[in-house]
Length: 95
Length: 201
Image 1 (tube, one colour):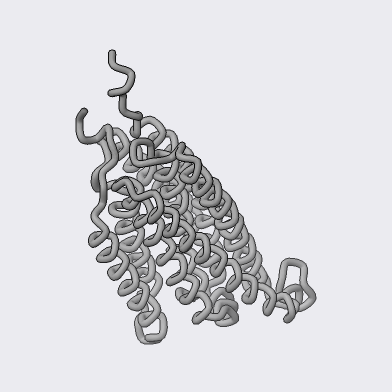
Image 2: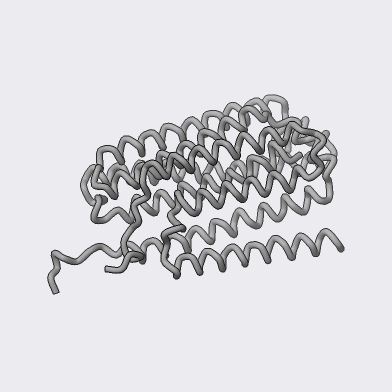
């Protein structure tokens, strides 16, 4: 049996580290929201949210240990979503 | 072929679940696109309307959902290691946190509804179009998300039952793993909803 056929067991310790990182990023994004002098707060909020999403997907959703098939599927999905949201938004924004 | 040596296929149900999650991502993705377009059109109105949301409640619910994701991840690890009892305990924690999330959301929504701020509500209709759109999107997106929390809670209950009767166990954990994937997706959606509605504006 090859490794990708079974289920990877994520050590409890790793789950707790990811949890701590997610809490720290939440605190960061809330703190940034109260700093009115930061003009790029939309960008900062989205970058922090994406960092949190990446942690959840890689560790809690086991993508770090997923098969090539699943990883290819997810990357395709992310690309399609970026095209759908990105291109439509730019079309509306510069109309 | 030795039937007893056959291991359960974990990859096929996993791929099926991811395919389902993609349809969920497109569902919410369309709404996020709507949000982006209206934020671009009415930045000042979104800013004003966003002041009306309660940041501490939103932050609390973010911590609640992240913690529920942790307990779900811990439940998956426990079951894979053969500890069904621990998996069940952690699923109960996840379930309790899901209900906590819904309770906080209930308080938030009822305070807005009391003020007449709800779709077609008397106070909402007096607001300029940008702020009206902000609150309509807020109710639509957090409402759809709350429906997912409720469905996820049902899935967790069903998983608890399946572990109890022994049909989900260390040799066959796919159902719990997929319930976990669904639950983490619900968390992922909130990870974007929270800053977009409570913080950005």
